[in-house]
Length: 177
Image (cartoon, rainbow, N blue to C red):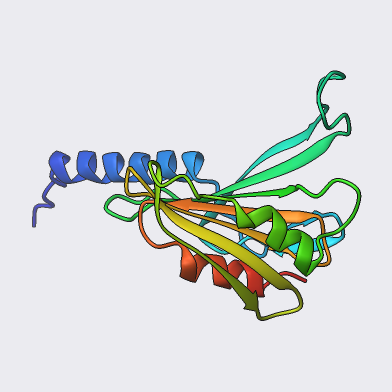
């Protein structure tokens, strides 16, 4: 009885597939049960999202805001034919946490330029531990942008995506602890 050799094309295809998976994993370092803590608030990073921390960056001395600021950028892992979404989490409120009134005042004029934005709306999201005041619009390019001020903290979460970002934003905002 003679043993047949494996087909070299199958071996090469398997090696190319393994190499592709390894490259995708390198570009999209997805972890499990990861969290980011900013300004006393813990933000769980959802599975399938990649963290890109900008770290602590000192502002120039002639800037309006001379304090240092930490920014965390998250993006959904790159998967072909899946719409992209990114979020930026930063302490935006100098001098203390947002109140409902200060958040509404800040977002009252946001996205009002009708040449660049359409479908503007503001809304409150009261779920989870924190209350959020959000402003949303569709950009001229078709991308959706959403900014939410987390009341009781100086944090602002800015979402942007090629499709609707509301569901992802609601999941992330309700998971804040």
